[in-house]
Each structure stands twice: as structure tokens, then as C-alpha cells.
Image 1 (cartoon, rainbow, N blue to C red):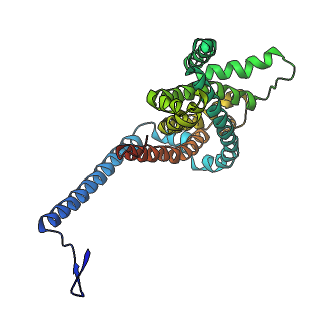
Image 2 (cartoon, one colour; image 1 turned 135 degrees about the horizontal axis):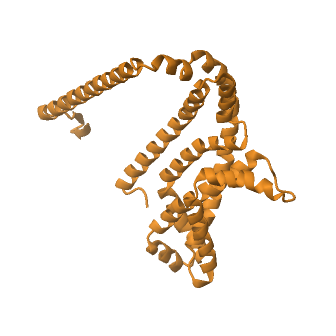
Image 3 (cartoon, one colour; image 1 turned 90 degrees about the vertical axis):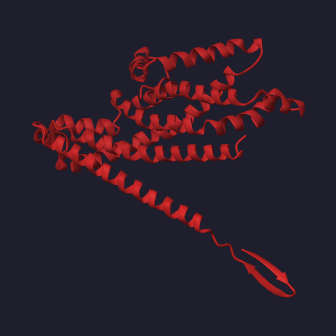
Length: 294
């Protein structure tokens, strides 16, 4: 709406959409309603078919009693929630350590000059080794191998050793994510910083790293989601987390419902983090399309 003054008289020019525009908007709304209805019907039909197939299978009564018992679920839920507190602490502590170590490894691998070749080689060997080593094998080696050495002053706590194994493995993955972000920054950015009088370290700290970190936020969040799930593997060392609490109850009652409860608890934690990752990714894509991200 625009306002014009003519000889002291205020004239308001109100925008009136054309009939064609109104028709297009009605058509778009109708298509949206139709697509929503079709999606809802197809979802309900698929769910109904799956329900009938599962519930009419010959072994469903025994499976329901063994894996989906409401009685055992009520008994197991408090113990699983208590054990989940350990998983959350491992996620916070190991996540922070992984980010710091991963960043240091990535910076070491991108250092220039022949004098830094040994550091680059060590960082590359670390990332190659722990990215290739299965996480469960790393956990077994650290949790059972370190106490076998009987080193003075070295802990034998399975929680600490399990957290160390998680940190060793995930630092290698996160280091490659950070390195990809650093190498995605155009060399002209570093050259421009150097032309302004910044040293190599200052250019890396104030120019390259801020851009690199913004670009790799979505894959970093994905790695944290994976770390949150893999904290349950510390149960193989005897640490009483959510998984091990479910295992204790299942071994006493010979019913596997506690495992289902523990799995659903992890899913309930993972879904918000996954949706947050999707939101951050979409937001960064929109900003990049509009030229808002360097």
C-alpha cells in the first residue's frame, strides 16, 4: 500500500491481486491439501498392512511376550533411565574432547612447509589407523589391554577407558571433517589475510578456521549423533549404562523387553538431535543460496 498527497488530500493506493494470481494461489492450496491427504492415506495403508502381517505371523504371540511385554517394560524403564545418565555424561565429555583433538589433528594435517612433515605424517597415520579400526575392537583393546599392562598411575576404570576408546576413534573421523572444511576455504582468503599483515597462524585462526567450522557444522552434528548411540558400547567393559542395565534385567528374567526399552530411549534422544541437524543444514543451505555464507 502506498500513500500519496495531492493538494493536501491523502490518497491510498491499495494493492489488489489480480484474478489470475488468486486462481494460482487457490490451485496451489488445493494441490497442497490433495498431496497431504494422499500422503496420510498411503501412510495409514502401509501401517495397516505391516500391522496385519506382523500380528498374523505364527510366532507373534511368543514374540510379543518376549520382546514387547508391558510388565517387563515398566520394571526395566527406571533402571534404564538411571543407566542413561552415564551415557549422557560420556556424550558430553567425549564430545568435547573429540572436537578439540579433531581440530588439532586437522590443523596438524594442513600445516605447510617441509619442517612440519613429521607432524603431518603422524596426524595422517593416526586418522588412517583409527578410522580403519572397528570401534568395538578399539574398545576391547583399550578396556582390557591397558589394565593388563599394570602401569603405575593408569586407571582401570571401565568408564574412563571406554570413554578414551570412543575419543580415540571419533577424533579421527572429526579430524577429517575439520580438514575438509579447512581445505574448502579458497586459498585467496589466506592470501588476502597475509597481504594485510597477518601471520600464517593469525590467518588460520581469524580467517580460515571460522569459515571452515561454519561449513562443517552439519557433518559434525551427525558425528555427535553417532557418538551418542555408540556410548552404549561401553557396556562390554562392565560399565552400568542403559544397555548394561537392560542386559542385567534380561539375563535374570530371560525376557528381552528391557533391550527394546533401552533402544527406544536412545531413539528418543537421537531423533531431536537428528531433526536439529536437518534444520541447521537447511538453514545453511538457504543462507548459502542467498549469499549469506562466505
